[in-house]
Amino acid sequence: MDLEFGAADEEFRAEVRAWLREHVPAEPLPSLETEEGFAAHREWERTLGAARLGVVSWPEEYGGRGVSVLRWLVFEEEYYAAGAPGRVSQNGINLLAPTLMKHGTPGQLARILPPMAAGEVIWAQAWSEPGAGSDLAALRSTATRTDGGWLLDGQKTWSSRAAFADRGFGLFRSDPEASRHQGLTYLMFPLDAEGVTVRPIGRLDGKPAFAELFLDKVFVPDEDVIGAPGEGWRVAMATAGNERGLTLRSPGRFTAAAERLVALWKERADTSGTALRDRVADAWIRSRAYRLKGFETISRDDDIGAESSLNKVFWSELDVALHETALDLLGPDGELESEWLENYVFSLAGPIYAGTNEIQRNVIAERLLGLPRGSR
Image (cartoon, rainbow, N blue to C red):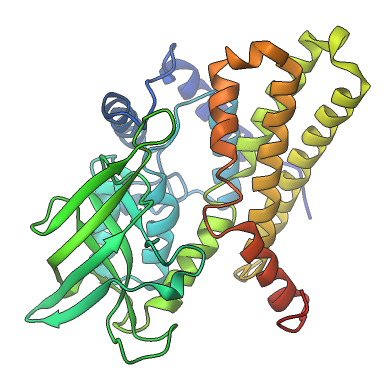
């Protein structure tokens, strides 16, 4: 594998770095989990979109620049190193868009992707249900055939971004007689449609990071079905692979955090001790290992499939360890350091969302190692 960047790649890096230096807000935006902060982050998405930097690897006709995945990794490294705002559009651009590119129609791509790239439409993920989290196939929300489309009924919970987003995407049971993984249909729907009730879910700090969605005969036209009706599970696995793989958590996120952790250790080296020094070094090494794994992943022509579960376990546990180390370095001051503390609290959700790490280890054991079920 060639780990050297070419001259054109470095030119792109320099362009991105200069643009970020000029445009990243001098003061952090309010939390995107608040109404005020969500609006500010939506405006930031529009700024990125206007520069065609929101989705650099997408084709130009959809609002991107058509650059290679390698240059997308370059962009991500610069983005996180610059301390740029969190991406309120990540559910759409990192989860829904790759699914559409693989299973959507040309009409869907032309209709859905440009407004997403421009920051004009923000998407919520509507997968989990009260009885179907990591065991997604247990979902009970239904899609019933009607003239020209479908009627959605049921409840979705822990719907990311749904408190303030415009549209949602999720999986619904369209054939109640089929087996668990059959008879499912993948649909998109507006959150302001008749029959949709959005109930925000507050975190411990009161910020509505999620929402419950109650659906009562919500009409969705046929044009908003992704893939073939009844084949939603196959389509959904494309989304799950992206969620657990590189697109949701790119290496740049962790290399930038590890560099900040090293800087923090240097500030506190006199009082941190050997054990904390070793933990800082371990976090830095693991962030670099994930970066190298990213290069290996994009150099392959095939989908990584079940290997996405390896990625998910690795980055989620790295995120927790990195932020725990930072708080231990800070000591009592950590309770006053809002950025490290808030990011630590968020990191604790990593081993749970996108499928719990316990489930991911089952996938690794069965699909990668070939171990029989029940041997774990």
